[in-house]
Image (tube, rainbow, N blue to C red; front, side):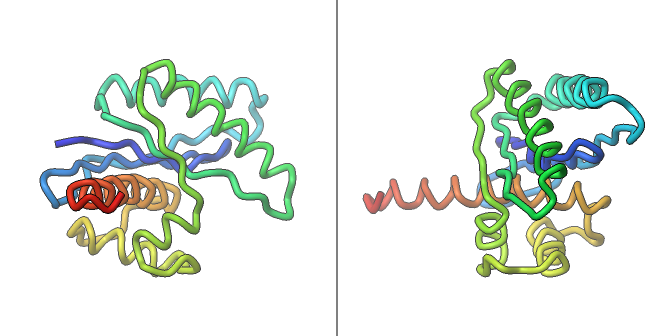
Length: 168
């Protein structure tokens, strides 16, 4: 039974999701978002993310951390802010000695839906179905983080099956 912490990085809102694997079944341990005040200086926002992530790690003791890779958008300022948050996430995971996996948004979409161009609604539906949930995790950032954790588990399972069959 391994628990993976999935992260959807952001400076204003950082989504997190904890997903447990038990055999071939997945279950949601918890999810949420770390929100930082927009008016706060960047260093204070990053410190808040650092502090809350450390608390999550100590409370839940995940076996690994999976984080969405940065993809560049037209808004460079947003991309830089997300990069700052990713840096804090990677630092916290490294300090805790956790294995780290990074996935592009397209990899997460492909793994969960079979289509790398899936929209947000399709992704949220798959998260709900794969975990047997009544409702989609909220906020959206948390649902995205849960999807990243599911991606980690699914790709790890595929690697195990390939290794077992000698098709690596």
